View (cartoon, rainbow, N blue to C red):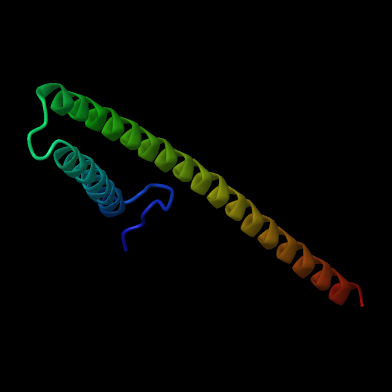
Amino acid sequence: MLQRNPKDISLYNEARLGLVSLFNQLGILSIFVLSLLILFNGNPPGIAIEITFIIGVLYTAIAEGYRIINQKKNKNENVITDNSQDNLSGNASKISKINISISLFSTISN
């Protein structure tokens, strides 16, 4: 059976998150462009189109930056959580071994 590292985000989840982010950005930018067209009655000046384009590029870059940073934070939190769970399960197995040793010792001494 193929063993997967749970600390790594799967390619499917990464692609899904990227696609959701893309549709979110596309929806917001579409609303912005439609409001621009409504504001100027379907004939916006060139400078308004240029400003809209620049704002759209900046918004997309900032949103993707935040998404990537949050993805890395979540990945690091998962690594810390997995490590602490590994430590807890290791401690539990040590305690159970000690309990077995104590019970064997008390059985032998009686």
